[in-house]
Image (cartoon, helix red, strand yellow):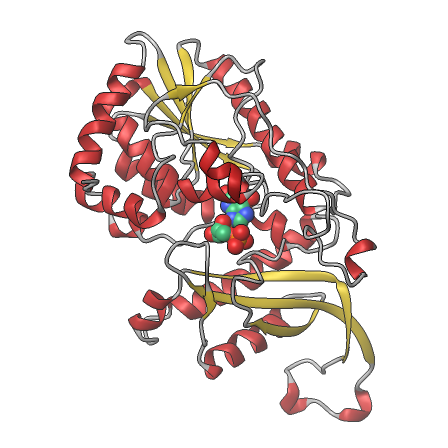
Amino acid sequence: AWTPGRFFDLMSASIAGAIHPEKHVIGAVSGGVDSSVAAALVARSLGSRFHAILVDHGCLRQNEVAEASCLLKSVLGDAELRVVDASDTFLSALDNVIAPEKKRMIIGHTFIDTFEQQSKLIPEAAYLLQGTLYTDVIESAPSASSVSAAAPLPPGQATTETEQPAEQEYDSAASSSDEEEGLSAGGAPSVKSHHNVGGLPERLALQLLEPLRLLFKHEVRGLGALCLGLPAASVWRRPFPGPGLAIRVVNAPLTRRRLARLRRADAILQAALADPRRPASLRRQIGQAFAVLLPSVRAVGVTMARGGAASDHHQSRRRRYAGVVVLRAVSTGDYIDAVSVDLPHDLVDEVSRRILAEVPGVGRVVVDVSPKPPATIEWE
Ligand code: XMP
């Protein structure tokens, strides 16, 4: 039976056996449960021969680098944590890009470049650790039938795959037609290409190590909590997609200003959810909660006098057009299906008022109640 204890023993033996005794492993970490558990697992097996690398791609949430570093230091023991600020490189590579799959592809490639540079600074590095889960593998597979054909690799086995996920075509003009994107005849495209699935280019002289490739999220949490004794803040941290805020600025080019606005709106939502006066049951119910920015929707509204509605006089109001923030909170077991969480109205009201008052360029706040399927959790 797949108990966390048995899996941990198998994993440790498999990692220790798969890694050359004089070689080192570098690993992408984000502070999320997947990469933290993968990193803790390898750090336990290899100690200072493991180097965890946290890349700031400029699309992280407010305080994310500080919070993630703090969590990671508590699980890494003798292993090194390197924080690399690559935001300029990522944001210039993403300049003027709108298509979601193109954003993912650019972010994936820039990650690889960043790791290539880092690996050159660690001459003993021969392996790259990734916290890929079975869910990522399934959702990036070209079609349901090929999931079973492409048997997942045994845990801990280092691979040198070279195949890249096919890029899904995105045409914002076509998306206004009645035909549902991705369902047209001529093949079954992947649900979406996760930036961390698809292997590594051959030029990167690192072997890929994906010890969690056979596990679902709840199994990874069990492994982290029961076998590795990871702090609850790490184990229960809600997932955050690798491309980060880049896929939550929808249908518009990314700019530092838009990212800053979304970051601010998201922080307002997170603060309201974390408020200890709210019931813990609400937090437990939420698998993921975040804000999305729709800068290209110009919703009509009116200007408000300083100080808000109370001191506002209708004659001084002027018409204005501004962007939209979407609030999304979902409950999910496996992130393959999800339903929206019914956020208390007073919370939504408080968050919406704060966003409208504090985030420039936003004139309307809406709540997304769509289940997955047919919607996905993310908007892109
Ligand atoms: P969707 O939007 O497909 O998301 O319902 C399911 C889960 O996957 C996360 N997600 C991603 N994670 N790279 C990632 O590392 C990605 O490109 C990506 N897209 C979605 C999403 O946040 C949710 O947890």
